[in-house]
Image (tube, rainbow, N blue to C red; front, side, top):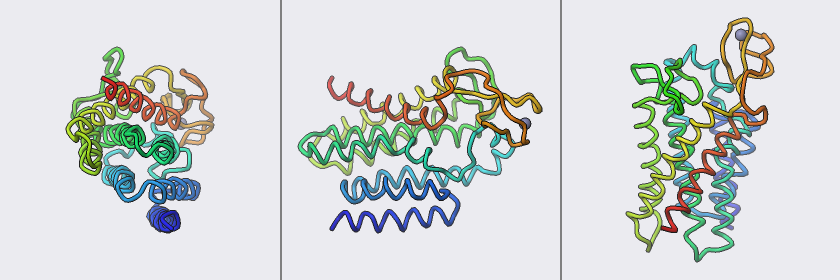
Length: 264
Ligand SMILES: [Zn+2]
C-alpha cells in the first residue's frame, strides 16, 4: 500500500516539475521511478530529504537564471533536468533506500542515502550560488583564475554555499533519524557532502570531458553541437566522463567519506 501512495506522490511531483519546466519528459519519468522507491519503500523521512534536495536545487536554478545568462552555455544543459541528471543526482541515494530495505537494522542505508544527497545538494548549491562571488573562481587543483561557470572552479561564496547545502541535509538526516547519536550523524553527513562536492570540482577541473567551440573560441560542456550551432571538438578529459557521471561520482565520494567516518 505504501508503494502505491509512493507512486502517486512521485507522479504528482514529477508532473508538477514537468509542467513548471524543472524536468523535461525523460527527467519526469526518471523522477517518478526515483520518487516511487524513495517514498514508497523508504517512507516520509526519506521523502523529506529527497524533496529538500529537489526543491532547493530547482528553486536556486530558477532564482539565479537571469544572473547566469551568458554563463548558461558553459553548462551542457539548461535548468530543465533530464533523466541523466536525475539518475546522476539521485540514483545512488535511491540504491541506499534498497540497502535499508534489505538491512533495516543497520544505519548504513540511512547514512549512505543522506551522504549521497548531501554531496549532490552541496554541489548544486555551490554551482548555483557560486556565481554571486564578486571575484572569478580559481581552479581547485592549481588555483589558476578562470571564468565564472568553469567546471572545477571554486570560490569563497561557492564553498560556503556548498557547506550550507550539505549542513541542511545533515540537520535533517540527524533530526529525522531516531535513536542514534544525532550530533554524530550531522557531522558525518555534512562533512561527507562537502567532501563529495570538492571531489566533483576536482573531477571537473581535471578528467571531466570538455569540448571547444571553434566559432566562439570557448570551452563548453555542450556536445555534439554548441548553442551557436557549430560542432564542438573534444578538448580534454575522459570522453565518457560527462557531467552526469561526475555528479554520480560526487555522491559516491560522499558515501565513501561517510562510511569511512562512520567506522572511526
Ligand atoms: Zn559556438
